Length: 178
Image (cartoon, rainbow, N blue to C red; front, side, top):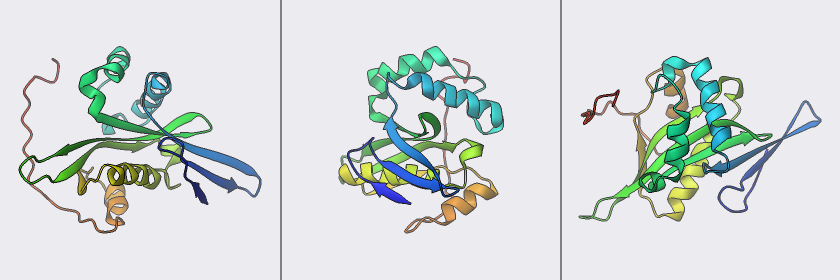
Protein backbone atom coordinates (compact mmCIF):
# COMPACT_ATOMS: atom_id res chain seq x y z
CA UNK A 1 0.00 0.00 0.00
CA UNK A 2 1.49 3.36 -0.98
CA UNK A 3 0.28 6.93 -0.59
CA UNK A 4 1.46 9.40 -3.18
CA UNK A 5 1.05 13.06 -2.26
CA UNK A 6 0.44 15.70 -4.87
CA UNK A 7 -2.09 18.38 -3.97
CA UNK A 8 -5.42 18.07 -2.17
CA UNK A 9 -7.74 16.14 -4.45
CA UNK A 10 -4.88 14.35 -6.16
CA UNK A 11 -4.04 11.87 -3.42
CA UNK A 12 -3.81 8.46 -4.91
CA UNK A 13 -3.58 5.04 -3.38
CA UNK A 14 -2.24 2.25 -5.48
CA UNK A 15 -2.98 -1.28 -4.35
CA UNK A 16 -2.39 -4.67 -5.89
CA UNK A 17 -5.09 -7.31 -5.52
CA UNK A 18 -4.72 -10.96 -6.36
CA UNK A 19 -1.13 -10.25 -7.36
CA UNK A 20 -2.02 -8.60 -10.69
CA UNK A 21 -4.86 -6.12 -10.84
CA UNK A 22 -4.01 -2.55 -9.93
CA UNK A 23 -6.77 -0.39 -8.44
CA UNK A 24 -6.59 3.33 -8.04
CA UNK A 25 -8.28 5.28 -5.26
CA UNK A 26 -8.54 9.02 -5.80
CA UNK A 27 -10.01 11.76 -3.65
CA UNK A 28 -11.61 14.91 -4.94
CA UNK A 29 -13.85 17.65 -3.66
CA UNK A 30 -17.47 17.65 -4.72
CA UNK A 31 -18.04 20.21 -7.47
CA UNK A 32 -20.19 20.83 -10.53
CA UNK A 33 -18.02 18.52 -12.63
CA UNK A 34 -18.60 15.44 -10.45
CA UNK A 35 -22.03 16.13 -8.97
CA UNK A 36 -23.76 13.53 -11.20
CA UNK A 37 -21.36 10.83 -9.99
CA UNK A 38 -22.09 11.95 -6.42
CA UNK A 39 -25.84 11.70 -7.02
CA UNK A 40 -25.40 8.16 -8.39
CA UNK A 41 -23.43 7.25 -5.24
CA UNK A 42 -26.16 8.68 -2.99
CA UNK A 43 -28.81 6.68 -4.85
CA UNK A 44 -26.77 3.50 -4.38
CA UNK A 45 -26.33 4.25 -0.67
CA UNK A 46 -30.04 4.98 -0.30
CA UNK A 47 -30.92 1.73 -2.01
CA UNK A 48 -28.62 -0.47 0.06
CA UNK A 49 -29.10 1.13 3.51
CA UNK A 50 -32.09 3.49 3.58
CA UNK A 51 -32.22 3.27 7.37
CA UNK A 52 -28.80 4.95 7.61
CA UNK A 53 -29.69 7.87 5.38
CA UNK A 54 -31.01 11.14 6.80
CA UNK A 55 -33.40 11.82 3.92
CA UNK A 56 -36.17 9.75 2.42
CA UNK A 57 -35.05 10.41 -1.15
CA UNK A 58 -32.16 11.88 -3.12
CA UNK A 59 -33.08 15.46 -4.02
CA UNK A 60 -31.14 15.58 -7.30
CA UNK A 61 -31.98 19.13 -8.34
CA UNK A 62 -31.51 20.41 -4.80
CA UNK A 63 -28.03 18.86 -4.69
CA UNK A 64 -27.12 20.34 -8.07
CA UNK A 65 -28.25 23.76 -6.82
CA UNK A 66 -26.43 23.49 -3.48
CA UNK A 67 -23.09 22.68 -5.14
CA UNK A 68 -23.02 26.20 -6.61
CA UNK A 69 -24.89 27.98 -3.77
CA UNK A 70 -22.56 30.38 -1.91
CA UNK A 71 -24.14 29.39 1.43
CA UNK A 72 -22.61 25.91 1.06
CA UNK A 73 -19.17 27.18 0.03
CA UNK A 74 -17.89 26.55 3.58
CA UNK A 75 -18.95 22.90 3.38
CA UNK A 76 -16.41 20.44 2.03
CA UNK A 77 -17.38 17.04 0.66
CA UNK A 78 -14.45 14.83 -0.27
CA UNK A 79 -15.37 11.94 -2.55
CA UNK A 80 -13.45 8.66 -2.56
CA UNK A 81 -13.42 7.26 -6.09
CA UNK A 82 -12.21 3.88 -7.23
CA UNK A 83 -11.75 3.46 -10.96
CA UNK A 84 -13.82 6.63 -11.45
CA UNK A 85 -16.81 5.51 -9.33
CA UNK A 86 -17.71 7.33 -6.09
CA UNK A 87 -17.60 4.71 -3.32
CA UNK A 88 -17.46 6.92 -0.21
CA UNK A 89 -17.42 10.45 1.10
CA UNK A 90 -16.74 12.62 4.09
CA UNK A 91 -18.38 16.01 4.58
CA UNK A 92 -17.19 18.64 7.05
CA UNK A 93 -17.23 22.32 7.97
CA UNK A 94 -14.64 24.60 9.60
CA UNK A 95 -15.61 27.23 12.12
CA UNK A 96 -14.05 29.10 15.01
CA UNK A 97 -14.67 30.96 18.23
CA UNK A 98 -13.93 34.69 18.02
CA UNK A 99 -13.41 34.99 21.80
CA UNK A 100 -10.47 32.59 22.10
CA UNK A 101 -9.53 31.91 18.48
CA UNK A 102 -10.12 28.17 18.82
CA UNK A 103 -10.52 26.59 15.37
CA UNK A 104 -12.69 23.51 14.92
CA UNK A 105 -14.14 21.23 12.30
CA UNK A 106 -17.43 19.39 12.44
CA UNK A 107 -17.75 16.17 10.47
CA UNK A 108 -21.29 16.07 9.19
CA UNK A 109 -21.22 12.79 7.31
CA UNK A 110 -19.00 9.85 6.43
CA UNK A 111 -20.24 6.86 4.46
CA UNK A 112 -18.68 4.10 2.37
CA UNK A 113 -20.76 1.79 0.17
CA UNK A 114 -21.08 -1.68 1.71
CA UNK A 115 -19.13 -3.50 -1.00
CA UNK A 116 -16.12 -1.21 -0.37
CA UNK A 117 -15.99 -1.35 3.43
CA UNK A 118 -13.12 -2.86 5.44
CA UNK A 119 -10.62 -1.75 2.81
CA UNK A 120 -9.36 1.38 4.57
CA UNK A 121 -11.45 3.86 2.58
CA UNK A 122 -13.07 5.53 5.61
CA UNK A 123 -9.64 5.84 7.25
CA UNK A 124 -8.30 7.46 4.08
CA UNK A 125 -11.24 9.88 4.01
CA UNK A 126 -10.43 10.90 7.59
CA UNK A 127 -6.77 11.27 6.59
CA UNK A 128 -7.89 13.70 3.86
CA UNK A 129 -9.90 15.63 6.46
CA UNK A 130 -6.90 15.76 8.82
CA UNK A 131 -4.62 17.07 6.06
CA UNK A 132 -7.14 19.82 5.34
CA UNK A 133 -7.38 20.55 9.08
CA UNK A 134 -3.60 20.84 9.30
CA UNK A 135 -3.50 23.23 6.33
CA UNK A 136 -6.16 25.38 8.05
CA UNK A 137 -4.61 25.22 11.53
CA UNK A 138 -7.64 23.46 13.04
CA UNK A 139 -7.32 22.54 16.76
CA UNK A 140 -9.82 19.66 16.82
CA UNK A 141 -12.68 18.05 14.98
CA UNK A 142 -15.75 16.33 16.26
CA UNK A 143 -18.77 14.48 15.01
CA UNK A 144 -21.96 12.97 16.27
CA UNK A 145 -21.25 9.35 15.54
CA UNK A 146 -23.60 6.60 14.54
CA UNK A 147 -24.56 4.33 17.41
CA UNK A 148 -23.93 0.84 16.17
CA UNK A 149 -21.31 -1.83 16.79
CA UNK A 150 -19.50 -1.27 13.50
CA UNK A 151 -19.20 2.48 14.15
CA UNK A 152 -18.02 1.90 17.74
CA UNK A 153 -15.24 -0.41 16.51
CA UNK A 154 -14.21 2.02 13.79
CA UNK A 155 -14.11 5.16 15.96
CA UNK A 156 -12.64 3.23 18.90
CA UNK A 157 -9.43 2.79 16.88
CA UNK A 158 -8.80 6.54 16.48
CA UNK A 159 -5.65 7.82 18.15
CA UNK A 160 -5.89 10.80 20.53
CA UNK A 161 -9.70 10.62 20.42
CA UNK A 162 -12.33 9.72 22.94
CA UNK A 163 -15.85 8.41 22.52
CA UNK A 164 -18.26 10.40 24.65
CA UNK A 165 -21.90 10.25 25.56
CA UNK A 166 -22.18 14.03 25.30
CA UNK A 167 -25.50 15.76 25.79
CA UNK A 168 -26.64 17.20 22.50
CA UNK A 169 -29.36 19.79 21.92
CA UNK A 170 -30.94 19.84 18.51
CA UNK A 171 -33.69 22.34 17.87
CA UNK A 172 -35.40 22.31 14.49
CA UNK A 173 -36.17 25.79 13.21
CA UNK A 174 -38.17 24.47 10.28
CA UNK A 175 -40.32 21.41 9.90
CA UNK A 176 -38.56 18.50 8.21
CA UNK A 177 -40.89 18.85 5.21
CA UNK A 178 -40.19 22.54 4.66
